[in-house]
Length: 226
Image 1 (spheres, rainbow, N blue to C red):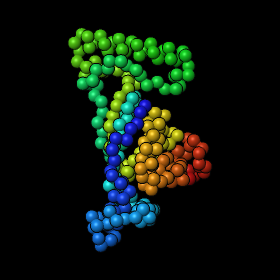
Image 2: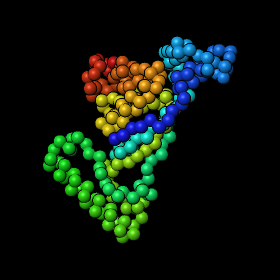
Image 3: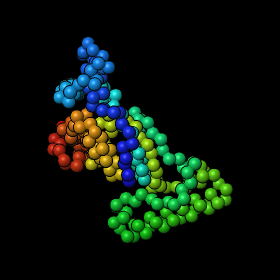
Image 4: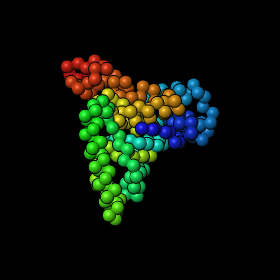
């Protein structure tokens, strides 16, 4: 897995603070944007986000290249609909070498690894035979497994990223997308620490665990679920 931050809104916190100030100041953002001090930016974002007025951080967006993840992971990722995606196409890109993404639960057991690779080798052979018979790659791909690696470009605004981190940084999230989410959070937190302060799973951002009896135990859960 490889996660790279390709681009982002320049000075994302300054942009969001100027947008927030627009709602309760007589001057337009064109006048305030360039002159806001770091302290003013901090005060504005702390105030409005503390009130729950997080729509202002939608003005900052971040674009990532997420590489060599499984199709199982990318299918979870694209469920977050308030985002833009461009994914490597199995229709146009022939799978020359099927180097599968392998869960640790399989890697740690030699017998499981042997069984896994027998299946992968059979799938590779079948896929190549189909392509060799003149079957279009868009049809031959039907044999490929969820373990097939893929690349995808993802763009989300800061508000949606915080929502994404809330669910996908959780210990209860599937391990691969959790790793992706944590890496994305690490990258954006360096750029916009005010916006992403306390971003993460519910137990971090809300001091609340919604998982009930299935909680990882990181935060105490009462009998009533609070």
